[in-house]
Length: 105
Image (tube, rainbow, N blue to C red; front, side):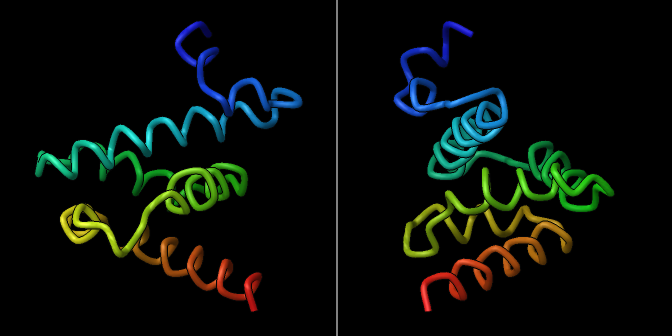
């Protein structure tokens, strides 16, 4: 995976369990950039929605803590991106925010 070898997160991977989070984190950065450019994110939104409704717990956790956790509601791209999210992705976003708020309390 040469494209990820230069990523600081890649060198911090202790084992293969971390790698999906590194990859989805880079994907989140890409989606944020597209959102800043006001691109149409419909296809990406469908992919995220499929992750949100998955019966596989690890897929949902990857969405929540690998992708959604990267989003910053104070940034200008946030509202544009949320306009493309489906109902289940928004639900998972709320769950992620609530989870992180509980941890910080």
